[in-house]
Length: 170
Ligand code: ZN
Image (spheres, helix red, strand yellow):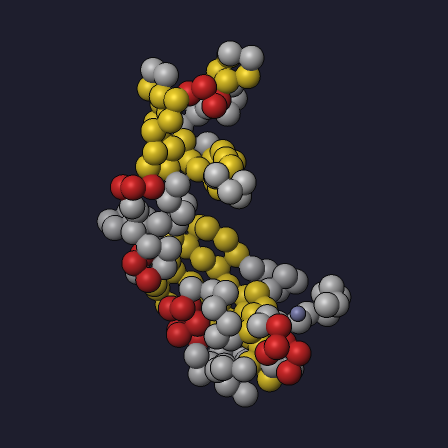
């Protein structure tokens, strides 16, 4: 059976990322004991990722790259926000464990949703936060193996996601 709409796909892969003219960095790997299982075409993954797997069969291997604009997007200037450093103070004292360039910090937006921001710069009394996805501006390089392809069940199609053994029944 080939990967296509209404199939449930299991793959293992390694992901590396790179910026123009820089070396590739290892990002993540899905091992055999914890593969990626997904309902093809359900919109949970990067569309280009699915397009590259379309038509493959169990046992096939794949290697492809996705340019930043088709992955997590380009780095947006508007996603950099300067804030007062008060938010990093506890009892009026700066928390220097947290306040370091490169650290990821959890913040709440106006609706109370948690967002992750990277500390991009520290100046006197202000902190520059970067809300871009950590992989924005990076080309993505996937390589892996199709472990299995099967027809989705009516229930999975109804729920819009793959069901895996031991998954919570709902
Ligand atoms: Zn479900």
